[in-house]
Amino acid sequence: MAIVEVDITIIGAGAAGLSATAEAVKLGARVALVDDNQHPGGQYFRQPAPKNFTFASLASDRDRQRFEILVNALDSPLVDYRPGATVWDIHDPLTIGVADGQRSGRIQSSAIVIAAGARDHVYPFPGWTLPGVITAGGSQNLIKGMGVIPAGPIVVAGNGPLLLVAAASLVSVGAEVAVVVEASNRSWNIVRHAGELIYGGSNLRLAVKYLRTLRKARIPVLRGYGVIAANGGDSLNSVEIAPIDSNGKFIRSQVRQIAAKTMVIGTGLTPSLELPRLLGLEEVSMPLRGGPNVLTNEKMMSSTRGVFVAGDGSSIGGVELSLVEGRIAGINAAVHADITVSKSAKATLTRDFTAHKRLCRFRSGLESVFMTKVDWYDLITPETIICRCEDVTLSELEKYKAKGLTTPLQLKAATRTGMGRCQGRNCLASLAAVTKSGSRDKEPNGEMPRTRPPARPILLSELLHEQLAPPELPEDPHLPRKRE
Image (cartoon, rainbow, N blue to C red; front, top):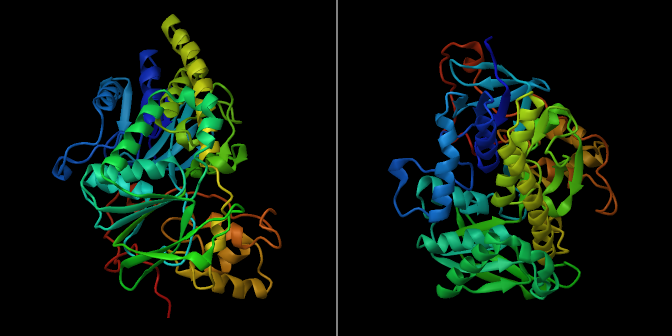
């Protein structure tokens, strides 16, 4: 198997990965940039294929200019850019395994920057697997990457700033948004935390822009409400919402039903930790930032020397924080790789350290504004699907718990929860929650399933460097496994 040697390997070509690449290249570092998307940009700077340009881009002039500057670095002869490639293993802290067609092999470097981004934090509830129920991140992908407008009427529901972004984006492309349902009802917190929010800069201006978009379109925003169920047969036809009391409990006696063909559910993001966990990087629990976060120092270095983690793949903070952390990680990774750092790079670091502190203060204020006491796992009923890949319900898990299989690892082995195409990304947190005994504040019982390679599904043909006949798949391989 071929081994390529570079100074720095950067995993992920989103905001953090691109900014890390740009800074490392300025210093003369040889960089391998690996990304599983066909186009650079990640979620925020997502670039649609030309055939999908069905309406004007949602990107502002400022964002288009920033993206053009970032991708210019990919033209450098110092960059080995690999789009559509999957990092499936990290053999040792500084050697990665890449599935990349005929270029599959290993990349060895003196430093690694993991900028793998985040994914939607999904909580199961009755009807969450119905066709027509999509995540906030999924709706952004449909619009920005595919040029697809979800069918209306649309209910946008959940908690957090991403909900506002998703709703405004839908309205901007002409989607029929019926209502926005936000669980938090702490508008007075905006004044209380104004001292932190003022550090948001362009983030605040964007928030105002999104609110104006909704107000101009006369989209009602229900605060202090949450969706408790999605209804339908072959597809979604309505959602049920209920007010939330001061203790975070749903007032089910006041349920309202809203007709909908699409529901966009957004309850925050969580870092993509498959690769950090393969390395055993130290984590810290941050419930307001998607749960487990990678512990890094001010240089963005993790608990393993030479491994840097930046952007939402470390701790949820948004695009501005990702750009800053990417620059910090890129320069410090070059330092670790014994690349001489220029005076201008040192000046960039000084500015970015200051910007990082400012943006972190803004993030704390924003978290306080949207903080809610809701326990979303209270929505689960016995019939609710916990693992959608393997079609495992809560009642099935409870059946095995009654037989004495009470740890997440035991239940995974007995029911195949977490063994499907998503490899547990959408269900292992829920599995941990339902295995708690007594108070939900307690830690899950027993050992959690370990992260093992491959970190993402890959083709054996790419590892064997030969063509294999395609597998025989059902009509839609993404649908849950049918049980006899």
